[in-house]
Image (cartoon, rainbow, N blue to C red):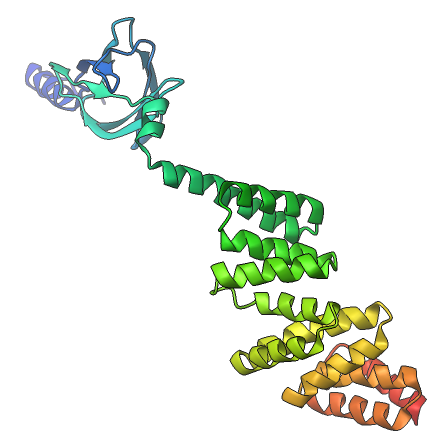
Length: 312
């Protein structure tokens, strides 16, 4: 059975409906540039953070004027103003009062004015730092020619930029261009003393040039400041020598590592392989056994055990 709607109930329903009805509002104004001149054809995008589907777009006229009418004056809208050649601007929480025409003006700064307002030194810094960072990425990808040109580009913009000298030194190191590696590394030390890892390049360059006394001095500094890192750097270099067939040079470096870090397990393993290649079975057995004692779970443990059968 349906209940009859009385005039009183109908009036109450209408009052409640009016209470929740959306009330429209209008915002007018102008958009000006940094000189106070109006800007035509500025795109104004209106969104509502509380309503993901709401999107409204308006455009300023030839006098920079706009008139924005929204059906619901309750939300706090977000405005985005944009035009080519100007810095975009976002204005959060714009309140458009209901049943009223409210005026609000906005200012957009031209890209040229924004650039001119920046510190020229900071602009130039951004340029050479960007080149340096690109050079680092190229170096990590082993694109040595590209890395070299990028580091050189950074130095063309700022000749005393220490990190770029360090980057060049590392490129020359990878290319085994020892004279240039040494020169760039020394310049890096002078300009960027915080880059302590450049000592690895100095060590390799002095060795490459046959200046063994200076190489030993650098190695001593590395071992004194950070033995673990020095050992790791030397181990990687010695492993490269071993893989390239330079067994005598590799063996000498492995022995130097053990002189400072006698329990460096992987070095015992590699030194054991060096002795195997020389036919020095007793020494090979000693180092392979020590490797297994120090790190029996190493992935090369099985290979070491097989090698021990060979040298018995």
